[in-house]
Amino acid sequence: MAQHRPHVRPDLSEAQWQSQVIQLAKLRGWAYYHTVDSRKSNRGFPDLVLVRERVIYAELKTQNGRVRPEQKDWKDLLELAGQEVYLWRPSDVEQVDLVLAIREAPGPWNPTEGAE
Image 1 (cartoon, rainbow, N blue to C red):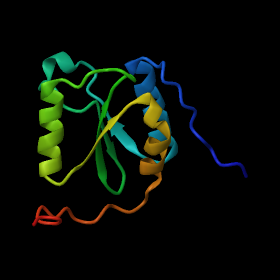
Image 2 (cartoon, rainbow, N blue to C red; image 1 turned 90 degrees about the vertical axis):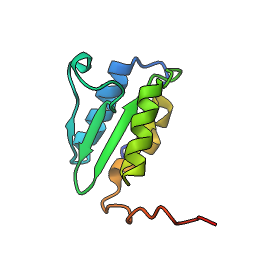
Image 3 (cartoon, one colour; image 1 turned 180 degrees about the vertical axis):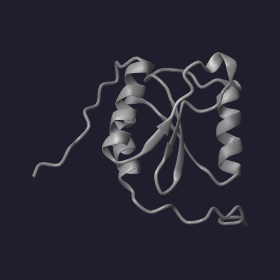
Image 4 (tube, rainbow, N blue to C red; image 1 turned 30 degrees about the horizontal axis):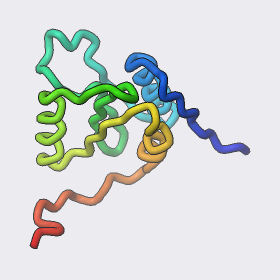
């Protein structure tokens, strides 16, 4: 049986890219949440929350889309809390598929790991 390989399309709009990520997530058995009208939510919160045996927060951008300061702040806060957070662009589609294929949760985050 041939293995599915996602197709890289760097010209996707953010909505098209989000649709592709959601499709990949569903194929891999993930539940997802996306705030439909983010104008009434806290600014900068990641576009997708994906849940299976672990939780992933994903900020999605077009190939050349800029990350706003509020988005970086949320990414930093979530990472500080030990969460799995990604910034994904259309050229990252193969990495997205690999991350979503991982079955086990990553090991616990250790803030002192690698510290001098």
